[in-house]
Image (cartoon, rainbow, N blue to C red; front, side, top):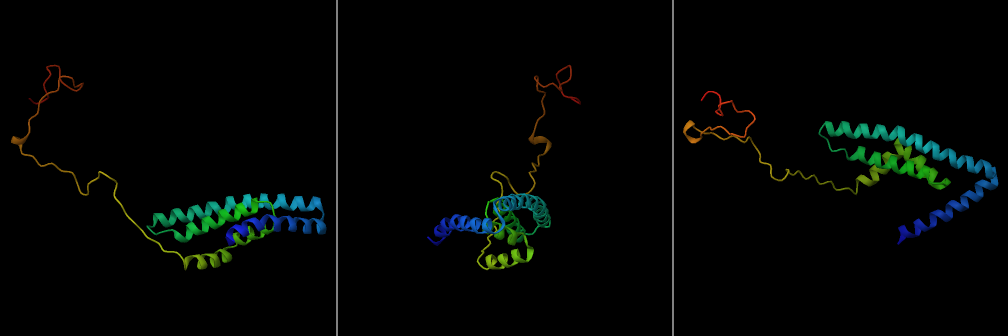
Length: 160
């Protein structure tokens, strides 16, 4: 219920903030500032998002669990979405999430509550180890397939 109330309160708070900022700097400047934060959010998301993806790949290549890099990527994505959302409160939250020391604080708060379970599975139908069939010469026969495109003119296999 508190989350729902917060979700409902955010638009009202944003409208109130638009009114206050508009009274101080004017309507045109308020709209330009709102558009500028959306453009900045897009640029920051592109730059920092690509570096987060690079860190995730590097950790996966090293065989490590990239929990921290994934959390950073999620926070950067959230920051970009907050900056794209019109409003000064969401812009402030978005800008904070783009700052690495702030993300570190958020990570520490989240990491205390995380429980990581790693499960490794095999693909169905696959066997471990090599598939070797060891036969003696008496346990198999070789015969020509008349429909084979690789048969010789006589229809026999080479060497027979």
